[in-house]
Image: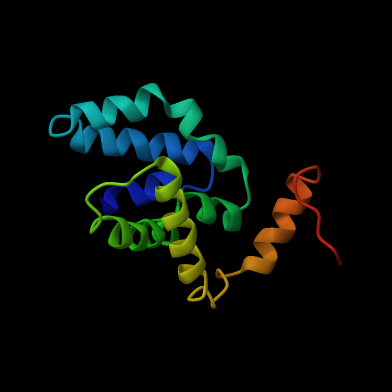
Length: 129
């Protein structure tokens, strides 16, 4: 729903609060469960707002993940059953290896994003410069 965009792309927590309020006024009668879920989990959902814009976009953009899942489903849906969990894991591993060959284009602004991630999380990500 494109109406969510102003909420998760807001520049600050206050702006996001205001956008959620606007969204709630418009849609709470039609989608009360969704709006209520967002409102009750708002503090957890907005923790990413403190990150720089490039990292935030990486967090809320799911196209890459959805594409990966679609390709894994394509491989697994034709199989009726798996002899074991390991058989499924092996198939997913091999499918991932084939999918990786198509990953030739880097994420937009990746150099900026990875630099910011290395500053924010120095113990988790180090760059070999």
